[in-house]
Structure formats: structure tokens, C-alpha cells
Image (cartoon, rainbow, N blue to C red; front, side, top):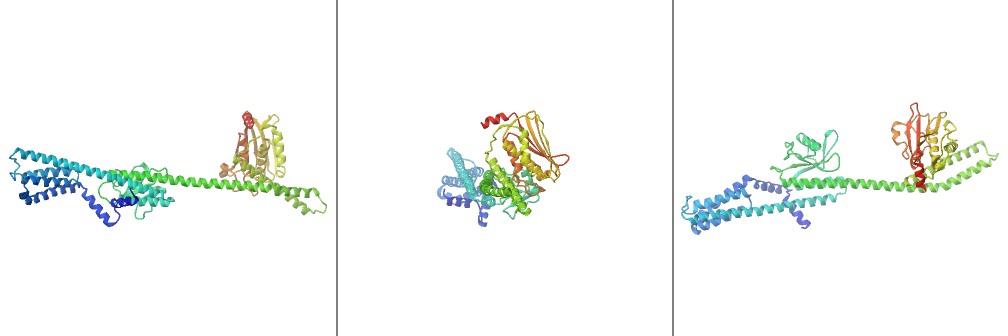
Length: 528
């Protein structure tokens, strides 16, 4: 079937204009049982009256063929019940009015009785066969309309570019297929409902109750249904994965009940619409994921490129500033010496920032593999404290380090960065003169390293995100990048450990790193 034929079939079965709507209503009237029985009576009566004119010319037996023809023709437009009535009345009319003796139900000859009986059987069989053929034709036409409606719906939904167009196509196809006012209804807050792409579709009174029933139970409600049938519209749920579930609304123009064929078609429409909505939502999610992945890739590429390119000029600046500081010419004024010191400090800070960015890129790419060796925890603490001596110059540092700590297999460089970042973070976020406590201890199979401060602590809303990349609390001082703690978390987890942040009861924050001692051998095997 071509597309033009499909459109012509749909146009012929789905009234759109005023003339087509009137014709559709007349067709519905013709399909009512009362109308069909009345038509059967009128047809038999008409043939009987006409037979009085031509029976004298053709004879009583030929008149039976006229009655038989009327029954066959009547079977083309009415159901089986009216056909049975027409067959019985035509047989009785022929025998009473035209078969001798007329105006009497008595039969003089056995041949006449057999003829009447055979006439009745033939009329009944022909009527039944004709009605069955017509019913089969109606069934095929219904299936064709069903398939055509689904084809047009699927084609239109597949051409929708976004959610708005998709909803517009859904409403249009529902109105065409069911000769009704349609709406795509979504629920809002406070058990309210909103119809989209439809203006004249109020949702008040019984209609609102029907929508509440559909939203609560997932079953149809409204006119021509089993629930809240006093509503003006018929409301049908869409079996979509979206929550809350959208609803289809129909204001039907027909006065007779919703047929089984229409219910099946509406059910098929609901399933196709649900698939289209889910497909559209998944496409949107996939597009967002693709854009996010592309953005992440470009940002990582940019950071890697900038970090590597910045290392060369930073090294040149450090070398030049170091040479100037080593010269120590007497001609250098105190101001010039101060400027050289600030250049060195800014260069160290910039170098540390670039190093953090590179390490963060390594963590994200999964290229961080700890190089495990037997390390002395005391030496690790000593090196980390020396590395942050300048940042801790305005604070009091308290170190608690038991003498009985065992050698621990770890990556010395990575764990040095862990302690360095924790100490620098504590110095940056606490007022000068406060105490910073560094503690190391072994408990059963775990090495615990903790850095505590006496500052303002971590805001409650930032506790869950304190280790996120580039996250900085709202009261954080200027100068941080938001990468140090994320590196701490990544390096600790690379050793099979963990890190946690919490606020101390007396004020301040504490960061605790836990490294498993028993799994160090398995990590060493993996490294080998």
C-alpha cells in the first residue's frame, strides 16, 4: 500500500471536517441495533407492497425469488439478528399474501410446504453467509485501519526532533485516529495536572478525579470506562518509565460506547507513545553524556598541554630568581631583595599548582601506580614537615610519633605529597598562631596518619564534597586551587587505603588517612 493510499484510507475512516463528522454520525446511527431491525421490517414491508403489483404478471413462485433477493441485499448492511427476522417475515409474507390460498397460512399441496421450507432455509443460509462475509470484511478493514493508524503514528513520532514536537505529533495523531479532542497531560505539584498542546481541555470536577485515579492506580478512567465514568473525557495512562507517568486525554464526539477495536487501538497507541518517549529521553541522556565526555576530554587535553608547556618557563624563572638571590650584591636594596624573594615564592607556588594539575590528570587517566618500598614513617613525616616549613612558619606544629612504628611498604613520594598537601591545607585555612597536630600510629593492620587543626572547621554543606576536584568551601581564603585534597584522596586510594574528613568537637578539622598494612604485600606483587 502506497503512502497516498494510506492517507486516503485514513481520510475515509477518520472524519475531520464538518461534512465528514456528519457522515460519521449517520454511519454510527445506521450501526445501532434498533435502526437495523427497523430497516429489516421496512424492507420486507416494501417488497411485500411491491409484490402485489407484479405477482399477477410473474406468478407466486417467481415472487419468492424477489423476497430472496431482498434478504440477500439486506444482509450486506445489517447484522445477523435483523437478517433472521427478515428471512422469517419474508417467508411468512410470501406464504400468506401470495401463495394460494392467499390470506391464509394453510398449504394445499405438499410441494408448497416443501417450497416454503426450502425458501426459508435458503434465505437464512444466504443471509448468514452474506453477513459473515461482511463481518469478515469489516474485520479486515478494522485491522487495516489499526495498522494504518500505528504506521502513521510511528512515522510521525520518528520525525520529531525534540520533546515539544513529539508531544505535538502525539496530540495530532490521537485527534485524527479517534475523532476526538486530545491532550497530553502531565502532573505537577500538589496533585495538579496540566494539558500540553491543547487549549480547550479543562481539567476540573470529575475529570480531575479521573486523572487522580489514573495517576494512583495506572488504570483507565473517565467516560466509557469502569471508573469515574461521569467525567467528560476518557483518560488513559502511558506505560512509560518517566515519573510521574504522563496521561492521554480524549474528549470523544461519539455517543455510543467505546468499542473493543477502539480500546485495542488506544492501547497500541499508548505502547508506541511510551516507546517514543523513552527513546527520546534516552537520546537526551546519551547526548548529555556525549557532550560531558567531550568536555572532559578537551579540558584534560588543555590542562595537560598547558601544564607541560608551563613547566619550561617556570624552570627558567626559578633558575633566574635563584641566581639573583645567590649573587647577594651589596648594591641590591632591601626592596630589590624583597622582590627577588616574592618571585621565588610565587614561582614555587605556581610550580606546585602545575604539579597538582599534572597529578590530577594522572589520577583521572588511571596511570598512578604506587612504587612500593619499605619506608620509615618517621622519615616520611620529617620530609613532609621540612617541605612545608615555610607555610607552617606562623603556626605551632605538634608531632606525635611513636618509636615502635614498623616499616611500611608504600610509595614514599606519593605519601609525602599526601602529608604535604594536608599540612599546607591546614596552614592555609587556620589563623596564624594556632596549633596544627600531626599524628602517626599503627592499629592492628592499619597505619593511621592524621592532621588536625584548631581553625573554624569545615562547613557542614562541604563535608560531603571536600575531596572533590576544584571544590572550595564558601569561607575558604584566597590562594587555594581545590586540587590538594582530591590528590590526597586519589593517592591514598591508590595504596588501597582511604581518607576521611570531620570536624573536631572542640573546634577545627581533622583529616585521617588509613593505609592497610596486610595488603601491602599484594600491592607489591601487583607492582612487580
